[in-house]
Image 1 (tube, rainbow, N blue to C red):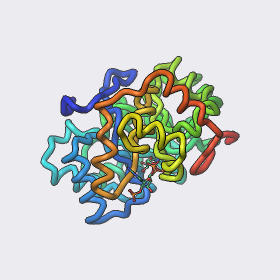
Image 2 (tube, rainbow, N blue to C red; image 1 turned 60 degrees about the vertical axis):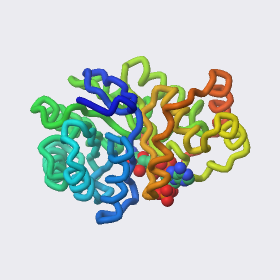
Image 3 (cartoon, rainbow, N blue to C red; image 1 turned 30 degrees about the horizontal axis):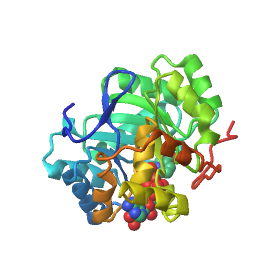
Image 4 (spheres, rainbow, N blue to C red; image 1 turned 45 degrees about the vertical axis):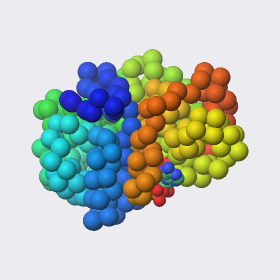
Length: 278
Ligand SMILES: NC(=O)c1ccc[n+]([C@@H]2O[C@H](COP(=O)([O-])OP(=O)(O)OC[C@H]3O[C@@H](n4cnc5c(N)ncnc54)[C@H](OP(=O)(O)O)[C@@H]3O)[C@@H](O)[C@H]2O)c1
């Protein structure tokens, strides 16, 4: 897969390359505004779009990619299997529906959105079948904590390539066990809500550090995630912010400052917390 040379990539455990940053499109309604935001992202150098069937905007994602005229194989599309669609047959059907919405014949990464008890093993079998048929380039999970991932690794024929979980400096040490397990097993952590949904961008420590690097606090958070080895998927519908968020390749956070950021950890979960799910 060819990406712009300015865009850094990680290599997944099956050899597929994934951009280290992408546009998240949660809470962006299907329609022109979302299509324009994705168009702006593609023009700014993004090549990864993170959607999900439950976001109800796969149609806009597909339209934006097609109208950009960027060859399909140069854009990395992630979508996810929603909880109500878990189970073997249901998952196969849901995947077809996502392809229809996207108007694509494959996706790059298909994830189980949440670890639904009693269903997730059958769902994984369906993802393995889709992967074996070559209709997605990689498969993975989301919101899997250590117990869920260990269970999956005990029966998986295809190892997940990615685990998408909430990660930022305010939720880091508390996630050490799942991050370490991912690292040991060569599963890339994909950091969702990497900007804390905007709620910590005025934190004094961040503001001070960001000034020193002459970057914004959003850029500092995203750079922190990338230097941790996470793929980051910030969401914005505002064109200037979309551009700001990908402008993170011209500076490097020092080891000391990485530690300072790590120590902002306070178990801050902005969304739903999968810890404790059986
Ligand atoms: N797998 C899962 O269960 C799961 C859960 C949550 C999220 N996700 C994925 O992760 C993506 C990102 O997470 P998220 O949407 O929860 O939160 P986020 O990316 O941490 O933050 C998004 C918020 O920050 C604002 N923002 C973006 N850039 C900014 C900037 N440069 N300066 C100031 N504010 C800025 C956005 O507002 P504007 O749009 O107004 O700019 C929005 O309110 C989602 O879109 C989705 O793709 C996955």
